[in-house]
Length: 136
Image: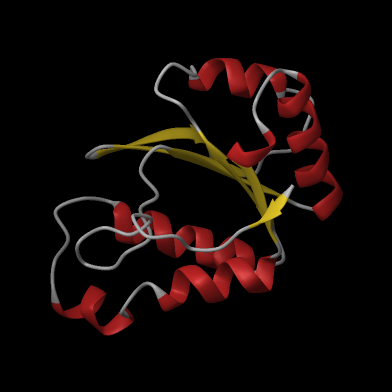
């Protein structure tokens, strides 16, 4: 499984973390995130569509993609800045991320069903112009 690296297209025009076409799921431990990835692979999700992020690295990368002063000076028409801020706070508290490249045909409910026995603390699916609340 690959490690998370903020790729082109994972931010919006303002530079806020917005990985369109991905689900971002937060877990209390690295083992929980790894187990979730194993379950999704067993369910048919390709290895290349999964990556994990340790708390420090995830926080650093998604914070680097956001200009905090810009959040204060300009109002946001959406919730993407608040959502990114919540991910940063969870990572800062030691939560681990699993990022799933969610093909358009992959139902969010199915992914959550596969992971039903794991402690997902927060989750979002990023679609074009819509952030879908999954957990939290």
